[in-house]
Length: 265
View 1: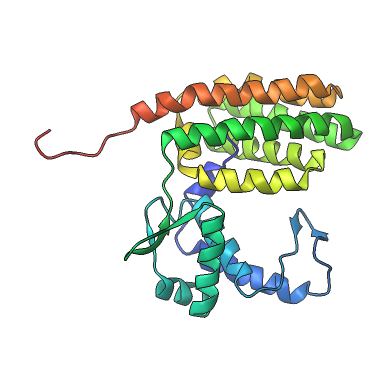
View 2: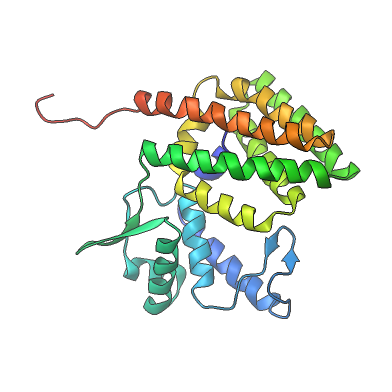
């Protein structure tokens, strides 16, 4: 299952503005920390005024607050984030370069919709990157991290046994992130974050697909086992096998999606 917590997808409206405020507060309180240093699991953002807005809009797209094809009006965003129009415009430009937003002539900006074909391409790219991260994690993992991954695996088993889809989804997201963090591949992590954001709606439908947790559980456990055993080759193959399973499921989910009503149909 692709790393996406369902409980975050269906969060209440207005979270983006609240996260913007928290991000600004963080910038003010940690401004003496050099760029690239870490606070918790997050790198300190650069001091550009649009950076918190970029983070807030990106997070809103990831969480499903902003949905594909939704128009993003500069005036509304300026009010929502208590920011200048120029900062909002710069943020939208940055997110356009990330592939999360597109500009439509005479219509302005909107959240970019991703087709099934592109979702498959994204998943194929993730297969390469996550395979690399799993292999590197197997080479670098220590005892404490190995115990943590084992605990995540146990929790995932219990979630499947009890039918806790939301809990399983959150654990799935946590596992994917921890593997990337343990790998030490920061650039790969940034790339994966962008790919997840671009593919958020397909990820959501995948997470909701009946039987998917039970199908993906042994795939995740195989990744954990190989990483804990320091078997880089097996870890890479397990991660790739998991994404191949996702690739097989995506077309099935797309076919099951309700189709728009057409006049005369």
